Amino acid sequence: MAGPPETEGKNAPWGRISALLAACAATLIGVARGLDPDVILFRAIVAAGLLGALTCMVRSIIHRFSQSV
Image (cartoon, rainbow, N blue to C red; front, side, top):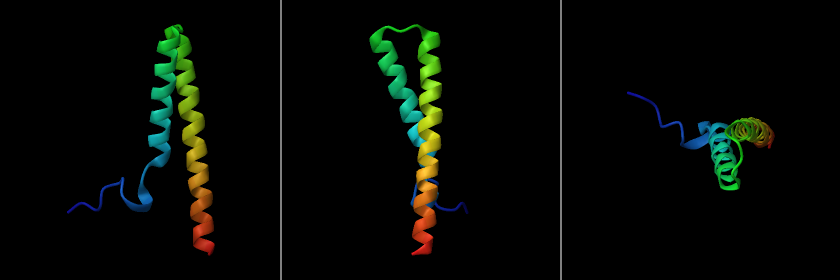
């Protein structure tokens, strides 16, 4: 039998979730502003990478501090 779903508890993929949301937001903003598709793609990739990495780092710091307390 499989374990608990990945979205519950401490194993939730918040980095991936925030990266996908950032990419969607960047895409929608680019389409609304009428930007070229290559610019939209570049901005979506950059937004997803930055926000996903930042979220993973913040969660790692929070997890590290919660273990030491």
